[in-house]
Length: 133
Length: 413
Image (cartoon, rainbow over the protein chains, first blue to last red):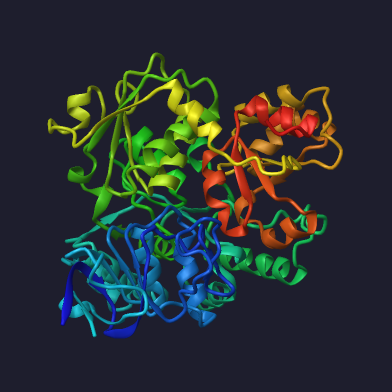
């Protein structure tokens, strides 16, 4: 089974379909917060939905407003199952913890070539482990 | 995390349920980052409005008020999404406007000072070297860390509110000296004559180093930058690079020299920004059909001196028919701008001045764009050019005087 170790993690164990991005993410800059679809023109995942996905993003972008946004999309039932970041920032973590969405940061090895969009993956924050099922 | 006796008591409910829940939440965030303890904070700046919080956030605030939540330290608010004097004209949703009024009342009942500004560092509170604060938005944090030498992480709405209720924040990131050392150097060989040029530097450096813990050290600039220039530089670095701190040798308090700013380590990279690099930024925007009917001076709100400069630019001129131009600032700056005649000069030209808001978070902005058939948004702020994309604007960065000309001639160049 293919596995990825993460450095930091929060939340319960979840499983879901992977959505793998080569571009960073902000729920404010990139996301339509009423549909859960990435709408920023030119984003590498433009037109893709994050709803119920395990989202792999290499970086976090900007924005303090993201802290409330995760709670908002969770309430609207359009949240992803988990966020898996290469590099993240405090806002993403504060927002995910507040919304109760599992989040991880740092990965070994890099998911490129190991996980592709559509794969079914398990995120196990307590073991700091992501498994491709 | 190691908890003091006071923190243990807080967890046991000594200051009520809201503060207990807030500390529990902060412990989870602290654990993620490996924080070993809390640090007391003297000041909190939080983002909280109906556009960013939604119904879920408003319900959370109602519950907090019911739990008798009360700020333990002075707490101010960031720019919000509705200027009540303009909401009807802008076509903002009356239901959301009513929620915003309720939300503001909830905050005030918790003793939050609703300043509604993202330039608190220019107009409300200037922390000193080494002072721990808990601030958001990102532009306020990078300014606090870099220019004042104060210490803050990006504290998003829920995290800042938790800090307000407990009077502390987990000690990680920029509260710790080891994260404040510069990691790479940037030689500023460009002239940088306009605020937009400083934003362009932030874009170039930030986009290439998207990392919260990357700390650029700027050096080699030919003069001392002014506060508004550092504001646009910081806002853009934070926006494009998610960065929380920079050093500017000979200018910012933790950077008397390149070596000290770097903590006597080798930089992991040395880069330079030239006039050619800045020109390439301006040349990179797609002008599409040439639509130039929306010009915005916002994100961050305008300082008094920016208002003065804009009023001089627009004096005696009129917006091109069909063009909308928005300026946002806070209540204090607007009051002074009115007293000094700057506001009148802008309004005589047809410019709309919005108070206490940021254009980027205006409630109903996507619908506003459709209703006005705006395709482009032109601004002198690199930050807003970056962040407004989810509303499907094609954005264009231009120098301040060019923005004024575009607004008055309708010609996009």
